[in-house]
Length: 593
Image 1 (spheres, rainbow, N blue to C red):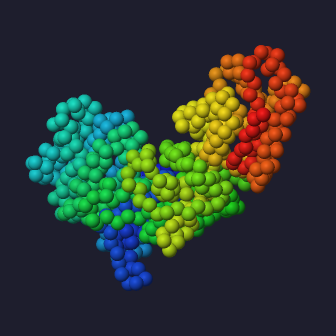
Image 2 (image 1 turned 30 degrees about the horizontal axis):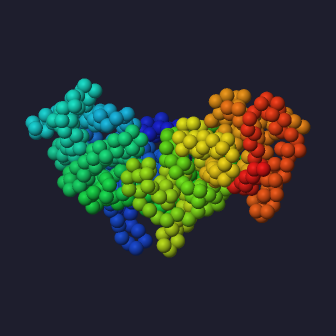
Image 3 (image 1 turned 60 degrees about the horizontal axis):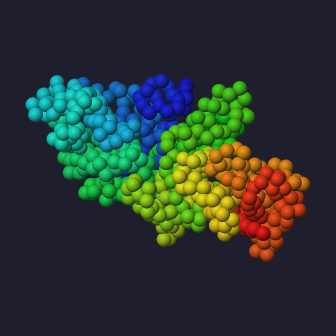
């Protein structure tokens, strides 16, 4: 690698190369992308339109920029290929002279990213998309000087002007709104026709982060309207478009063909579970090792692999470029690279809504499956198609959730059996840390189901409803507590103290390890003249019911022998309820006198 600098987050390939920033060479995949690779069976396979899905921060945008820079012609002088020759002269593709002669700098290219297209409501998001289309058209304003037919020139100018006026357009007028919708849906297809008429060459169309507007629309309640717009754009530009040379689309999730790619029969889809292009986006193991050598950090290889390795893209061992590059920068600029601690760079790169939903939706059985994953075990997941984003808010099965977590980078597939069932696991320490931090985020009153369950537990404690107390604590344990964190009695103590504090109005209404009678009671709750005393015990998870009940009885006896109710009686509490609770693993046994 003949580079001088490292750069994180640069998505412009030309800037990357010209400023001599580190680039992991992926140009050797261009012949395969264009159907020029000869496979072992002697055949060549060309995809007219490709969808390549990868988790966030795997380098999709930089890869799309590389493709654009290789194929795009010089609009001022189509015979001049000096720009791509300069950019690619030291990269792998330059060795394939025949391919370069045939394809380099030969096509008009339209490239648009839908990342950042969002809004609190549909109109705001539609305006955002209109502005993005307007920005795209401005890059091709030179076409108006190239003898476009008058009708096309008027429509071209109208698109730019309407985008400029986006904030003031009267969307309340149905005719105006429909005009905007038609303009956006046809915008990419129209631009291919303008470019073809001027240059007499079919056009390559690249759409990056196609699913971001749909994610945002789901969160804000206008999914169907946004789906209609994105589907219209896709059908217009990719379905029976005589001016289309090739289409390349990227995103995180594969939304089912029926939802968005209806009628586009020339679509080929490559996910993390498909062998095609499995090493094209992201860092391979070997590429990462070479990068560490170039950064004089090869001694940190084991740490890097433990923290950032582990993704299996259909047989390819892959790492997230964002995380690896951040570590290299942090360690390389550290005063002591050998002791620089690996960190979680991935968790804050975007929202974690999918992770949050996956944690809070499952029932007890499915939560145990999540817990098994946290404990470095594997789980079997049935293959399922993800249909539409709104389904993550209702009726989505656990296997679909797991599929979403695979495609968004929280899980990876180790093996696929003869029925297509997938054995999955958390890939590395960074993702495990992200997983845990997402779990920690639900311990707050923002999580309504969680908060309501804790309120119900408090109510059951004061009602002396032993069975309901046991049921609710078990549900909370099974859903939200790590088995490996439950080795000690004081963990359970802290767990219940923490959650019950959320639903206690005054600090004086809850106390822990406070001196009472002859000793220190584990937990005391007070409420309107009534009080609850709880004594905890911890037993091995293989304890028998008889042993557990005996232990609960011992806890109750401790309350009596040490007179933990003495101060409460002196203070005039009319009802004092006593609980002995024995914890074992992710379950508990509750007893009252």
